[in-house]
Image (cartoon, rainbow, N blue to C red; front, side, top):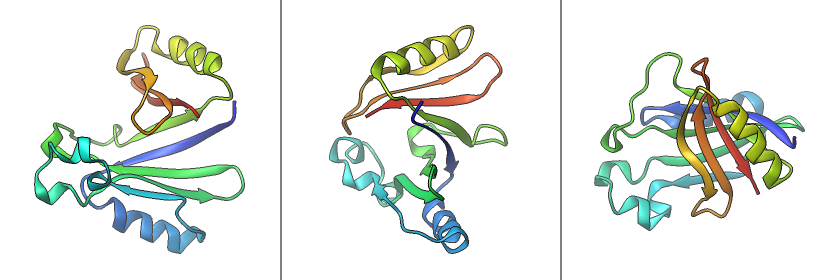
Length: 139
């Protein structure tokens, strides 16, 4: 397995939160993508949500990355304590991604099946039978 990282969700203040974490941990963002950067997604959003963060990555040390997004109420997202994070796995192979995803999904709920995403990664999301949220990707 290539890496295991934490993915945080916030209600509109992800940029503020990650600027704070950047001041604490140092380093630079490897990616900060807004919903407006993706026309097919932004087309369905209210104007006030288009500037919010779709994805941000901040390396923490040599082997970990803190990632995040704004959960958009306009897109039907809601947050409560306990569902504002996911464990993100980047697999070494597509086969490994399929195997881990399938096993984690047993008796759980697939939120997004593993498939090629518009940003070019093989990606899927699920909640396991213990109510832990997972994101799986292969680059």
